[in-house]
Length: 172
Image 1 (spheres, rainbow, N blue to C red):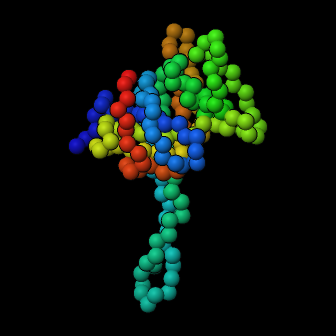
Image 2: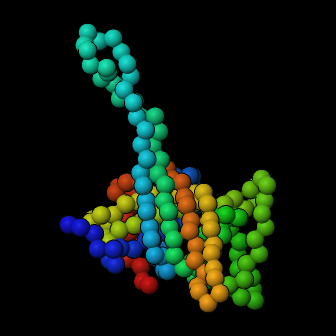
Image 3: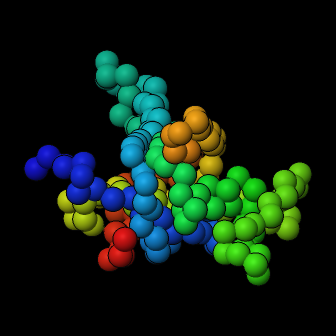
């Protein structure tokens, strides 16, 4: 059955453990206009002498990874995820939950960049794809007079598969 874009959703879980660990999805992202999660596989045949004209029988998986591109509106509630991925986790100040002070670090020892698990689909059994180990690779913020701020974010991840987690029941 074809996917209806309006019924799709993107959820995110923050990963404070090992890179690539599938974590529970805890937040439904709002203001997202486009999502693209792409599995990337590289494999090759080992050439061998085996009394056959076939070039090989043993397949070697060289690497497995994934990439994701998300774009949408900059929202106060969700944009700190992308800033945490760029600069490390920072708690909101006492005077406002929307005020944070980010400091760029050269060694990331105090506040390493946040890593995520993404979940995308209409539900967990129909067209779901998960991507653990999502690490920010690029972030662009754009704005024009009279228009909302928008962003484009690119991530690299461990893999992209339907077996990587499940969508949670989350409210808007």
